Image (cartoon, rainbow, N blue to C red; front, side):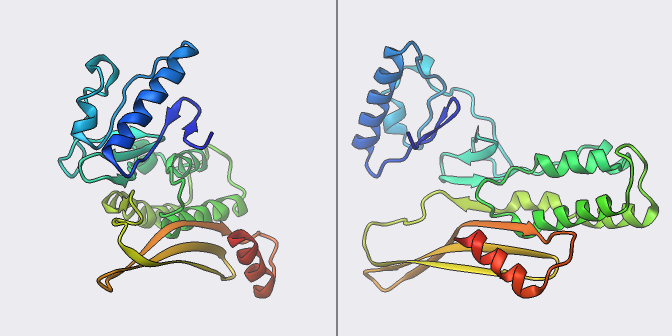
Length: 237
């Protein structure tokens, strides 16, 4: 109920034996309904060896880090290091034929379900809002000032590929304290919210990780800053 999105399943187990049991039960359950699973992939070689070769993901392309990767729900997963990585790639027409349609097409292609690219994505959304206010047609060439502004944003976006996201929020079960910290704020341009975990381990090491975030552009109809801060609080809730 909680691991499937359309026809993709993402699961996680603390122990290899538990992972093997999960894989076996899942395969039997789906096969009983006539849906044998395909392209199975685990970040444990021992578990992978228990799966018939025809059911596994045999061709994992290498990504920027040189590691094999699997694309799942629009995000690259590195099984070896167990990290997620987003891919942001501008097409040539989005740099040469700059129209409202092409800009929107690119912004919509940035897939960030956890909101971890929010600070960059919200800049794109603000730019799109600026285009709407300029009353431009979808395929009309943008004026030079808007092209220059877009180029400044676009040339920085591919560096988002360098951001890696740890899949495992708590890397060890030997912790003594686990806290959730939540923040929200707003400006006249946008508002947002984010959630962190803070984990204290037995050896007194502390690990703080951002686990999810959301951001919104402020409405075109101007609102007061207190109103926008309340929007941020509602988004956090």
